[in-house]
Amino acid sequence: MSGIALPASTPGSGTFSLLFGFTRLCKGLSLLFLVGYGLLTVFPSATAYVALIPARTIPFAWNLITAGFVDQSLPGVIISIIGLLLLGKQLEPIWGPREFLKFIFLVNFLTYTCAFVTAIILYYISTQEIYLYTPLSGFHGVLCGFLVGIKQIIPDQELGVFKIKSKWIPSLCILLASILSFFVLEFTTYLPTIIFGVYTGWFYLRYLQRKPETSIRGDPSDEFSFSSFFPEFLRPILDPIASILHRMLCGRFDKAGENKGYTSGASPLPGSDPIEASRRRERGARALEQRLAAEKSSNSETTEELSGKGDENV
Image: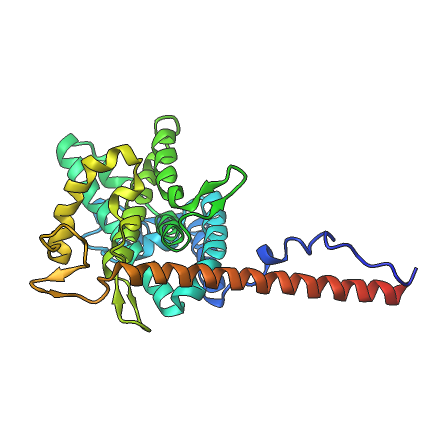
């Protein structure tokens, strides 16, 4: 009996990597979501001050920031917390806490700014006041931006039971939300922030994110282009359109047709080397593999400790 050991599949040990190892920053933000939901539950009138209501945004401009950190439904809060903990666990160690927090605030602000502008435009086109007075809130825009970060770091990693490559997850989220918005009225309020969350996240990672250790800015690789969010047969149509914005933001490509990086005038800008962008993704993949190996080792140690305690009891 003394030689009996607990199997590796002991309940709880197999889910150790999913239940532990979350960063302090993500835990703090999760607590903020709970406090925000509790505030709206106790004081429903506070929604007018913290959620984005386009008709009230001009005097209450802070809504463009606070809207992303409160949710009006308990399922939304749960999804936000789970998504933040799981995706943040993958991205924060690679980006660093400061860059991770910067990404959250910038993508959140841009997402709700775009949603505000869109609501105003739709109101002037349709004259329907629903666009001005529907409160918008939730962290789902930033979560979709996180998915773009996963797409950048491990694009060919297969996720879930359906083995879908991570590079297609952001596009599938937009497609699914668009379909559901035709059948479920609530999804019409989530759709704008999901779309803007994906593309503002991509915009930041594509053109603005700087790597402190290399002073690299953005990711100019073809695998992370705007058209990479769409099926391959659409890319010949989308690439010329996307190149207009690309030239406005990054200068021009050299006339030979080879992408030698972002240029301004005749000199290349930092972050223009596609090889460096590829190396950055490789570093991200290696960091992810090391973290998974560390979690596996921690699982083994936990199992051995439980086995030792079982032997002592026997």
